[in-house]
Length: 258
Image (spheres, rainbow, N blue to C red):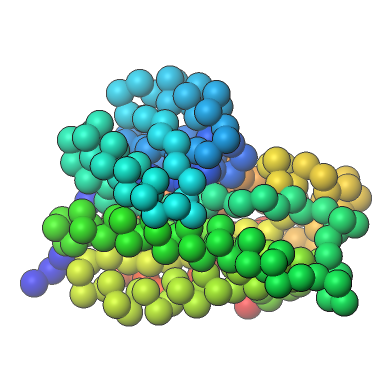
C-alpha cells in the first residue's frame, strides 16, 4: 500500500528555533506555501510572537527548551490543540549556545568534553526529543517529514569548530539510520547542510573578509542566504521529494561538491 503524501498547505510544520535567523527564514518559507507553522522558541519570545502575528491564522509561537523532553511533549500537545491536528513535519534547526567566530573557538589542545557535550545536547538530544514526540501523530497519519539542519563543514572543515562539527556529524548519522527505521511508516528523514550564511545571529561575529573569501570560492560568486537554504528545506517536505530519504543535500552555492 502506498503511503499518503500531503501537500505543503496540508502540513503542520514545527520549526525549532524558528523565530530568528535561518529559523525565521524557514518558518516564512513554509508559511508562504500555505502551511501551518509552529514557531518554537526558547529565549526569543518577542520575535516569535511578532512573526506569528504576521500570519494569525497559520502560525503559533510556543516556547520549549528542546533539550527537555517534558517541555517538548507539552509543545506538541499545545500545537495539536491549537491547529486541531498533530504536527506532520519537523525541522530541527535550533542552534544552542554557539557563534561562528574562528578567533574565539576552542582549539584541539584545550577543548573540553563539556563543550562537546553542550553541542550534542542541542544537536542530538534536542532533535531526538522532537522526532520521538512527533512520531505518534506521524504514524497515525502514515505521513511524516523530518528535516535536519547540518553543515558543509563535514566535507570542508575550513574552520575547525570541533564541538559544532562533531555534533552535526552525529546528526547526519542519525538522519541516515532513522530513515531506515521510519521509512515503512511513511516518514522521510533528510538533512540540508549549508555553509556560512549571510547573515544570521550565529554568523554575525564572522569578519567580512571571511564572507568575501567564501563568495570568491563558489561558482555562484556569492554566500548562501538563509532564504536560499530555506527553499531546500521546503523541497524536502514537499510532494516532489516523496521518494527521497536518508539524504544530505549541501546548499552552499557550489563551494563543496561532494
